[in-house]
Length: 127
Ligand SMILES: [Zn+2]
Image (tube, rainbow, N blue to C red):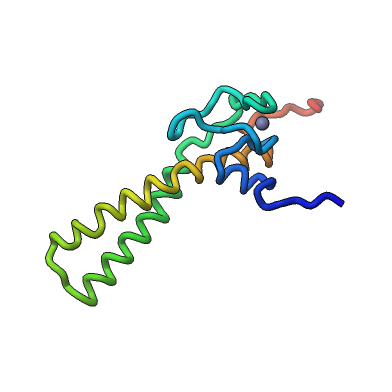
């Protein structure tokens, strides 16, 4: 019986920045640039187009975390503005840059897994 580990699933492969098909080859060549193909199994990454998806998720999730923390801090302590700047500017960098690459890898892995592509018009009789 074959055991499937969490890292072999498309979600784990995407979060780790690995090839969505084999889970071994690297997906990225830079911080967010994709390699042309998997160096392990040869999967062509031309299908991959996460678009603005990673940025939208980062903005929504990171924005909620920072705004919620800033509001709670203001209501409880009313610190001077320089304290807010010292606290939230570094936090903004952390909550936006850290998850960007894993989220992009996740969206590409899910795109591959679900065979998502642009919509096409099919005429009757086309199979
Ligand atoms: Zn591969």
